[in-house]
Length: 52
Image (cartoon, rainbow, N blue to C red; front, side, top):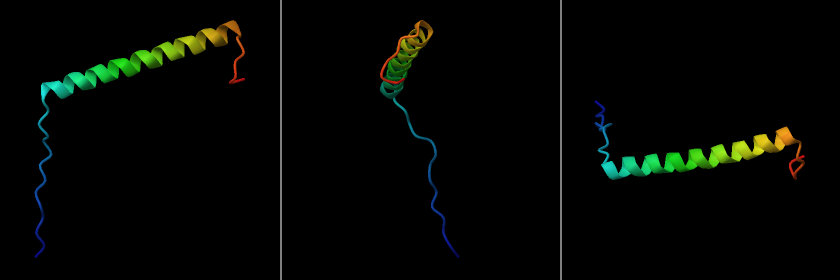
C-alpha cells in the first residue's frame, strides 16, 4: 500500500517580509505609473520617438 507524505501548506510569515513585499509593490507601481503617464503624454502630444 503506497504511503503519502503530508506537506504543510501554512508558511509562517514574519512582519519583515510583509513590509518588504509592500515596499516592493509600491516601488513597482510608482515606476509603472510614471512610465505610463510619460507614454500617454507623448502619444497625446504627438511626440515621435524610437518606438514609431
